Length: 287
Image (cartoon, rainbow, N blue to C red; front, side, top):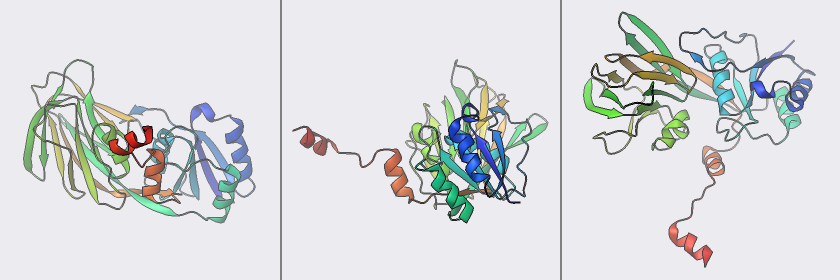
């Protein structure tokens, strides 16, 4: 029998909407209902989804999608995100769960490939690997002082600086943390990575957009007054000390996302309530 896995935000797991949706799917699938895995350490193992699963469905917001990505990574199983949360930029709007169930039965949904970034972290004699579909961020591990860092791109040193953090984002993640930190929106088809300092004393006048094949090197300086923490997709954490080195590049792995019927421009306009009025138009409306 065809298998499908539904990954729900924990607070919704036993809700009428989730159980009703699973009941609809059970007419044509063996349904496995699971709660999304909470935030955890980078070194904690995550059980991958059964590769025989035809489709994974996340019910919640973007955070639930990111949790589900951990389960489908490396399996080739597409992930269909359905918005039952807030902003939900990675999810489809919940217009009709019965209609969505029919589309899933028919296999009538587009699939897009989202590339990941990967990071290699040298901590003393140990090396750790991390990945993200949205972004990797270097953040302060405490609320004390800024982190002292150096940034290099393709073997060329670009800057030594102090900041509250640094975000390296994919196009998928450019509408998330990177945008709130002052970065720009990158269209999904653009093969690039974005580097955005967070509240820092940096000589770079603006965020950097680099080729996806660039290798980005970030070092926390031994003299850094504050400990740092690596955060992948806002979910997986690893504490790092001064003198640690992080190498970031795009990964050859990707995640298949199902759905996405509207164009990216339409989704952007909908989620961020565009078009934005200029001051003249705004004054004209008031008058």
